[in-house]
Length: 169
Image 1 (cartoon, rainbow, N blue to C red):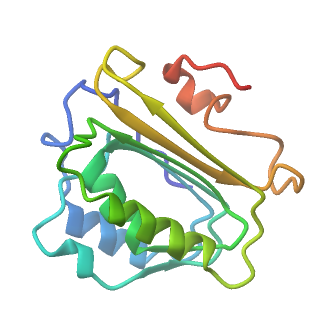
Image 2: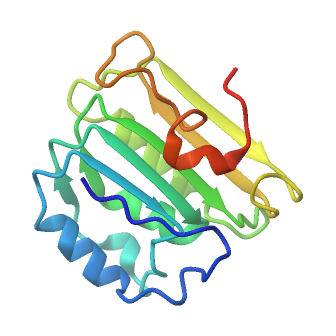
C-alpha cells in the first residue's frame, strides 16, 4: 500500500524529493502493491515518457491519482493493473485548449481493454475554475458498483479524498 499525499497547491509537483523516473522504477519493483494513492505527488515526467515501458501491477485493486493533468495521465498510461481495480483519476489544472485528450482515450482503452475487465460504471466529471481545485479539472472514476472488491468506496467518499467537497450521487 503506497499512500503519499500532499495538498493540491501546497508545494506542488515541483518540490518533491523524487522524480518521475524514480517513482516509475519503484512501482516496477513493487508488483505486489495492492493500493496506490498519489495526491499531488506525481512529479513532472521527462520528455518522451509517453512511450515508456508498461508498469505491471497485477494485484492492484485501488488506484487513485490526483495531480497535474500531464503527470497523472502519463503515469496512468504506463500502469497495467488488475482488471477489476477501482480507478479514480483527477487531472487538475487541465488546459482544455492544449491538452492531449487522445492520451485520456489511450488510458481508458488500456484500462478497459485489459484481459476480462469487470467494470459497469464510468463517471466523467468536469470541474471548472472556482471548483474544488480552483482550476479546470477532470475526474475519471472507473469501477464495478455491483461487485464489492472492497467495501463500497468511490472517489467522492474515500477518506483520503474528502477535499473534493463533492457529494456522491
